Length: 426
Image (cartoon, rainbow, N blue to C red; front, side, top):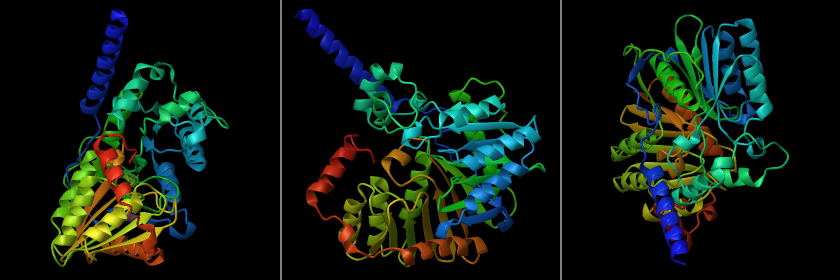
């Protein structure tokens, strides 16, 4: 009996220790990046809109791949079939080109890249880095610690194929860990670099950037590939670029750095400014607090959310109720947005953030891989008008239905308690 009690206490201590360590452990290289500001000309920034069923982002991705001569780095999940085919064709055309594909270890049954796609890329000489998400901190530490102690030792992320998902895949998925970056970066064939973010078919809104920011994107992705695979064929990270010349300031941000930039931008908005937010999900408390604070200072705030994602309805009710009419919320149908856009209009200047990360704890608390690019530019710039027009078009088409906001007090406190305790998947 004494031995059993000792064993139980020891197991609990080990479990608690693993949970605590995987909450605070140092982040691996290439994560939580805030790049140096690069100055860009308007010709180096191209806003890509996929509204109304267009496939402009995919077309731009394929053009970048087809023009690359030395290096292509793609972090996309799931990998689009057309994109994979163009990678294979480019490798055949230029056998010495180094192509790196970072793959989220998500089984095909849950929307991940089919394993035979990745196998075909590897057979052609393309480097496939299966992202080691276990190196990241755990969103649900109490569950993940138990998983790491038991099933994690025997759970291969690529052992599940459609049409059935096994128990191990389901338990692995419950860790809520993912590579959400959605980035393509490559040389432009003439000595420069170009990046596309979010690089995902149907992203809704994306941006193609040339210059120093693209170099920073490549450097971060290659560091992640480095600790995800021991492949010595990985290309060296490009050196940082000089400041550049132009009228647009741009930065590449990842993980928690995205949250920091958003909070800073919202917190410095004053009466007469306007905040526009379009995101699939909004639940991060730092952002909610910053938005409410801006509205209290007289900032006009408009928020566009997905009707189905948790806990959008509870957060929307909080925003509308606590801001006393200073915040407008509208709704898009489920799955209509897969990228996040934030715009802060301040006098004659715009601050813009665009990326694949939604505005939740999972994306912004250094728990999953996520990325965005932010810009500071004059509101008269063509690029500024393109960002604002993209938001306004979505806002005009969205629903005003106030019934989507959930005023259930119990639901609100459940959301707050679960997030504070690290038990929520948002």
